[in-house]
Length: 352
Image 1 (tube, rainbow, N blue to C red):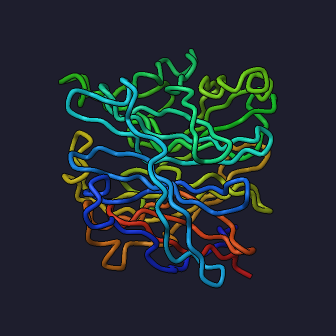
Image 2 (cartoon, helix red, strand yellow):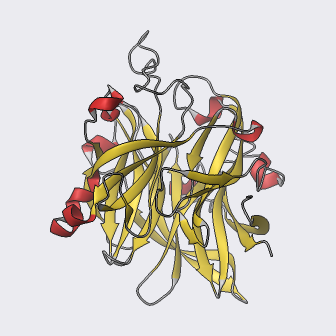
């Protein structure tokens, strides 16, 4: 069984606005969502001087049902909280937004670039404009892993749009994420700490769960994740360095379609993207609908690699970084970061 989907470029959707201080270092890696009136919005990461990131809001402009541009409407999240800032850094980065109908809420996972580096956090909204922080994510202690997942930087967090069966049989909300095991950046000589049973130190895709009953009792329980499981590691040449989840999983007949990024090249220690000599490509995997910890099939070759000037030249060259999927008039579109500087859109088609 193969992944029966293709990606076809549509064009560049958003570039940094000249003279806009909030976008001086680029616009990239957007979330998306529909407001209650059905209007499609982009929530781009806006990067100001000094790599200070905010989350903006921009209405997507359509021509004949195709996304072609945006109209900016301001900033909806900034690094205003103490845990989103360090002495020499700050940022709310790479938002992923999942609308969860059973909650009636848009759930935003984002990276808070605080005193201890990138840590995942969560906010919710009913209209995409006003966001309520639920705070940093907390991974409950799991003895069989022989470690505390809260120790580690973590990125590429995104929720499924509906409850799925949890490992314990309980209907649960599930979230994909990507822990990074090397603590040497934080404490010299500390190095890599792997969970029990994990032998590959490359960052891979994990999933954690929150019982539906807990969230129905109090939506703030969405930040308290449990039943952590490794889902997928790098397997093919285009993802040799690491992989990470992209947009919210999309329900398809075969299960859940997860568009992910795969990385090759060289990545020095630390979190400065400009020091990387890497290539980010887009791939896909399908997860079992009844057991989202199980990969049914995955792409052996990428669906899209950096080819255009916008994808090859930017803050970090050679980057295609998918982060959102939206349906417009029956057609699925994937929104993606281009070279950490601009935002593109591609059409997602199912093969006959």
